[in-house]
Length: 122
Image (tube, rainbow, N blue to C red; front, side):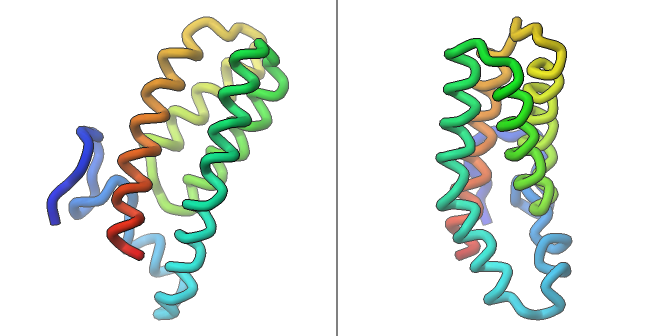
């Protein structure tokens, strides 16, 4: 498997821990694939919510939307995405949105890398 993007943390060639994720389904791989498909379909809305919160300088909405994304990517053990979402969540909680744009740019990239890898799994 070739890796896509330049994420610094690949686990067995993937930007998420495939083995840990699929272990949650006790051999029911089809169910895991359905969860991946659902995530692929919902992540654009989550990213839009984060974008909107930042562009509107709404720290509370940033905290909530980043927390939602953090929880979603945590199911896949996608640490780069989780850490970046957590950083945005903390900035939202603090009310100081300085640096959000840079973190968001990194998050967009890591989400793209994650989605490309998930499309290979499907």
